[in-house]
Image 1 (tube, rainbow, N blue to C red):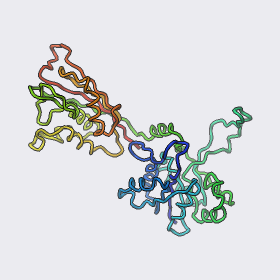
Image 2 (cartoon, helix red, strand yellow; image 1 turned 90 degrees about the vertical axis):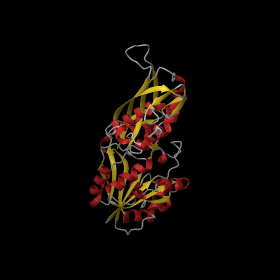
Image 3 (cartoon, rainbow, N blue to C red; image 1 turned 60 degrees about the horizontal axis):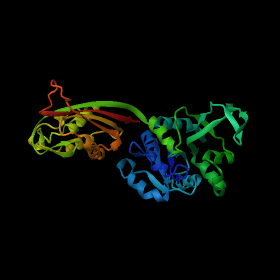
Length: 380
């Protein structure tokens, strides 16, 4: 007996306001979180993804990595029930399999929950993952409570739900013309007389329904927040301009350095290296002929390429120490130059310009510098 997964992501997102299955969390489409959890379990011979017709080409393009080469993508139906049936019809294995049906809009599903469900369902014909209701439940009509419901027997059904393949086949043979009357496959097989067991889930497995759910789920997908500190200084001499964060400012100065002397970009690189335990800028880019007068932005792009996929930059707080020229009128242009390279928005970059403020013990007449604190998120 093999395990086959059907991941349902064919909804139109009418209540959500758009296709929620392709909304991104940490630059990753929502539906991929479910696919990855099933793949990582290494328990499934087939994974079938049902998607809207309008998203077929988009999702096929997003799944062009080797990791997803065996994923079967099919067109969904007009309803959830029809989408599951369409995916079920794509199964190429025989009748002796376990079919796991999961909503793509539940990205918090973990590999451990799936493994628990695989083990639990081995000796059961039909299983639904569910949570026991612990809150007081009221029956309400016209905005007024009528009575308190006995919650001792109440559970909320989730996904994945698991069925022996022949049970689903029988249910579809008997009820295919009326499958839209059933809110999930568990209620469909119950109607056909099959017993459905409960597998209790105590982990968060929220289904995305509204835009606010994205924020809640994003928070619960964060594993850790950590920081890095970067500091860089260079001498100044007469010239035609300086580069700050990749943006060239014309003035009567230039930065004395082996590269272009962009202290802000150098500080960002060192902050990233520190946070990721990658050493320092000198280790990666020594003073060799290859790096002579090189753009610091190119160096930053190389370090960005070393950031693992499950880590994203959350915020950059930078202070640039420079007596002249004043950088206040250039801050937005500097941020707009850095943002696409760092793969964040301009609002996540704070740049402050400070001077020596006439203090004789801070001699910045012939030099300048930058300090950067960077915060990063590690995602589950």
